[in-house]
Image (tube, rainbow, N blue to C red):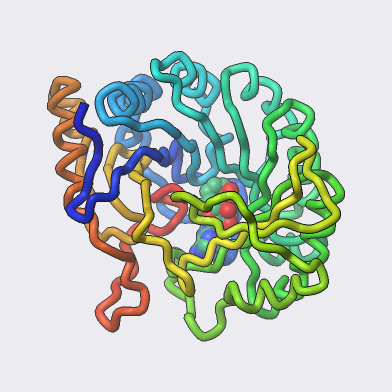
Length: 335
Ligand code: SAM
Ligand code: SF4
């Protein structure tokens, strides 16, 4: 089997699938208050089409890990069937999901039964008023209940994704870590990236990994002896704490902007309308939906996917003077 290898020798084995570009929150760093022009239904892949592309990825291209995301993936009607179909594949890929946690309380056990292995829940603040400001919705309690349900269902270790925003929640890193340690969740801070639909990201005001780590000095973080591998998160041990599985507690920072990890990237992305993107920051895409709907065979689709990945650039180039933010925002690419 020839996998997804690019010109720099990187091999993509981690597939991120966006199941929808729609969302029930409006995080300020992601989309405007009025939402976006959602994809028309006929442009969105059907459940069978998503399932077929995941199968081609796993059976013909060496995909070992599939992460379902969006938009908000829990809004996808066929979610449980998509998870179950992926869990039946051979070799069975590891199955993960990234969600804002709204409605997770209801579906966590079902997701686990369908075969989901792990979950990441996004949570930027523990303060209801700040949550409202950040997401433009009053839903903090739903997210907290979703987190508990995910842990009870065994979707562990439950990871929390946090974006810190200057002047809004930048001071909350220690409280969020204490909360995660108390409940056995694993917290990961993500540097804000230029992927907002409004194009308001500013390098000079984003909260950096160095600032986050400075705020966590009281926790006496220690270097993680476990190799980072291709993980985007740099992790540290938090002395004196264990997670829900009894493992040493960890905290992570995904410093895509100030400490880029493009050289180790193993990701390939499928959008909800069937486009392959070889990078979050790619400015072009390869249309697998057109091929699918024109009756292409599995090997033909696999070859188009390989071609799409060969053209991956060495890095995202955020710091290059010629950097151009991709036309699609994070919510439409799949974060
Ligand atoms: N709606 C789901 C959620 O919020 O978890 C899944 C999609 S969301 C785009 C995936 C992750 O991307 C979330 O953790 C979110 O905080 C993060 N994200 C969104 N916009 C971002 C940005 N501009 N910079 C960094 N992270 C961002
Ligand atoms: Fe929705 Fe996730 Fe974007 Fe927030 S970050 S608006 S939850 S897609």
